[in-house]
Amino acid sequence: ELGDPFAIFGPRGLAVDLEGSLLVADTGNKRILAFTPEGALLRQQGGGGVVGGRFEEPTDVKVDPADGTVLVADAWNQRIQRLSPTLEFLAEYPVPGWTGREVYQKPSLAVTTDGSIYAGDPALNLVFKFDRNGQLTALFGGSGTDNGSFGMPNGLVVDGVSGELLVADGGNNRVMVF
Image (cartoon, rainbow, N blue to C red; front, side):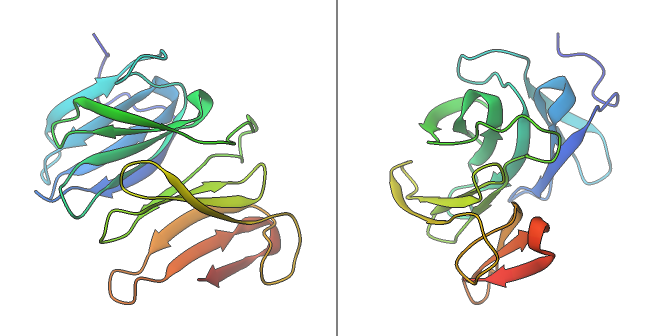
């Protein structure tokens, strides 16, 4: 039993799935919630733990536009989990970072139309790029104020038209475009 779905505690990430349902990363309750557009609960998945489908600090949720699968930033387990559109565990991808535990060091995700996954690490000031199978293909950033560095990448989004990655660099008070 995952508890009252309307007793949300510390939500961090939101997404809308391919059916128009709202997904919520209910960070404090260690779960992902899915609601209809009218606000009725569809399902919930999670609870604390290290096995697939359980989370320790789920800080963001995104939907792969290619197949509707759900990606979860499972921060304290240092992994991204891929769930089915109905929130059943499918796979996990280790993230070589996500060691920060401060309240402002919450990783975020972004997904491209080809399924590439970007993962921000606000503690290490890095952005990781994975292919849709979870293989690390690039990383960039580092601490600083120049155009290739971050002060705290704490928000990511991919522009669905241009394909550009936008990064909210909270520590440097700017949005960067890649």
